[in-house]
Length: 225
Image (cartoon, rainbow, N blue to C red; front, side):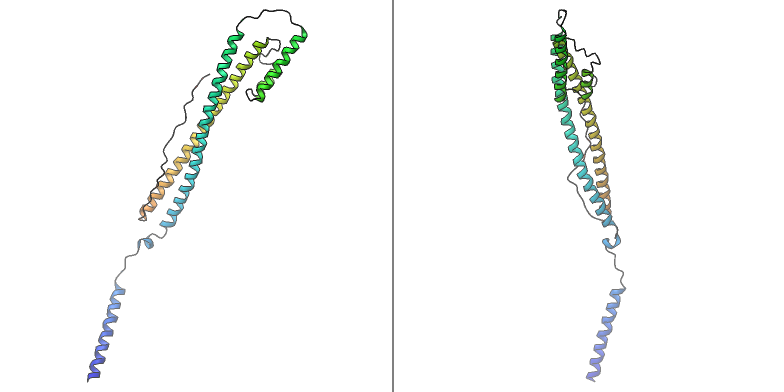
């Protein structure tokens, strides 16, 4: 009798365990967030990586823009010096020179002086190759018979013209560098916003310490020469 009761008790325990296990398995389980969004994290990582790569490009573009601004400043300083020199020599050449007959040797010496001076200016990059060719060919008003003071004043004016052209070119490069920096910064902002949205939908928090704001190019100091 005792054995029968013991066996019945054991079977009852077994049946209860089976029923409990069946009930646990039958209860529906809530899927995890990672399982619910299997494709969100990989896409978010790709967007975040693209944003960081764009940020590296944006930093280079800003560095290029900074260098372009420095080139504008240097070009303006060089033009300012050339302008003051040209004005000073123009004032010196304003004094009348008595006309008198010159020998061929003296005229030839003036021509050599003009050619040597123009070549020296060109070697120092104060005159362009095109300007030097004009001087050597005696075109564009270059007269080798003029007094050396007048020749020097004309050369200084040509240097000023060349420096102003350099300044204008530097201003154009600076403006282009600014536009490139602006486009790069806009790309960074767009990608980072997309990464934040994707990760927010996935329940993850992301914060970028580096902020990219709009910048403006340096204003040209002299619009018209």
